[in-house]
Amino acid sequence: MSEFLEKLMVKIPEGQITLRDDRIKKQWNVEVKSFLLSRYLVTQELYAMVIQKNPSEFKGDLRPVESVSWKEAVEFCNLLSQKEDLKPCYLITEEEVKFDAEANGFRLPNEGEWEYACKAGSVSSRYGELDLIAWYRKNANGKTQYVGRKDPNNWGLYDMLGNVWEWCNDIYEETVYGSYRIIRGGGWNDEERGCLATNRRRSHPKSFKIDDLGFRIAKNL
Image (tube, rainbow, N blue to C red; front, side, top):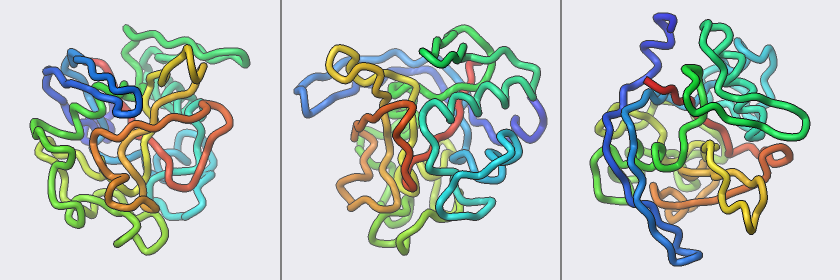
């Protein structure tokens, strides 16, 4: 990786996390291998450098990119991988996206990795006092804010809660929702209850894009 990306990525230790979905009254354990996760949400500056365009509603180089679909997020991951001479994780066609879990390129985190990294060793659904760690409806002034301006969690990750929701790699519940992908973290337009490490949402991977939804990147070690 380039020196820039080495500084951007944080090594997350291995461990395990118990996930739950209150809607279907289900919980399950996930083993998490050590991996790399970006310290910040993908910014508009980085996105435009790779994709050559900026779809965001609230413009600003250091604001998180938003208004991107899940498919656009994984296309970004593939292009960034190619720029860094890494093997892309996604085989993308018009009909489907196939994921190569063994590739060394950039990808979206799966939701077990995301929640495990968000909590950073905490057992709480937040890693600190909300006003100190997150931009949400009460303090965001109706828009996204520059990344990295709130307190990080114990592993040095910023904006894991608030600012924008984050796409994850996983399909939500294929038998019920088809190809819908998981969204985590809460955004600038959410009330306090929306900004919890345990909240799970989902939406369509190609058609859904909104001004409080972005992503961060992960990579296998």
